[in-house]
Length: 228
Image (tube, rainbow, N blue to C red; front, side, top):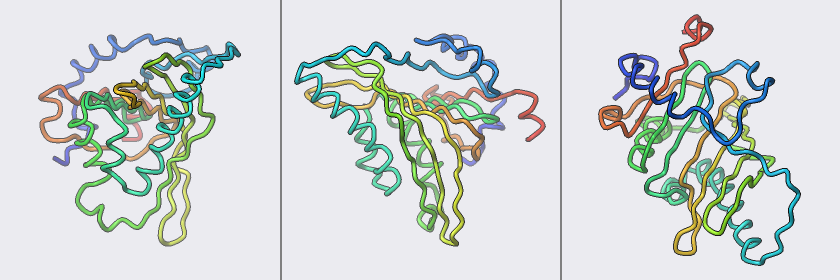
């Protein structure tokens, strides 16, 4: 239960195949992005720089709901409102993170997603936590929107304020969200966190890789081996 992903070398061959399948995406990396150190990123959507105006009232109402739904993520998780937070997502959600010198986690389905969250945020001892963590969003950009789908990107800043007064900016990055509208309501079907700086390692829920509901692609760069 407590084995960290860094020790999961047995699944490296499987993960290499997964990496190939995930390559590409809507927008390729620029020369600048390729120069920035970090593990391979998962697909991210192309920005909408068209300047086109849509005056349809339903489109505008959906746009407001989409932005509101995405930003609710931060308030709910930071206040520990877990039941409400999980309601933001579809049952088949793909929850993904890429962190330097750690790797990429892909949890398919809400059960696997909850397993990762339970170990990282709600495990034994979390009931004694007195550290206030904030997930701050900025530059929210709706890159694509149809009558029942949307793609959203937003910058993230994660900060930590401890009970002793110490304040730390843990990392920056981007949230990349895919949303779907069903029965008149929007929900998140994919949530990809692209992290800029290393964070503490996460643990793998028992049996996660056996069912392939959780995949892990380790960051095996030489600079990361030296840190470990």
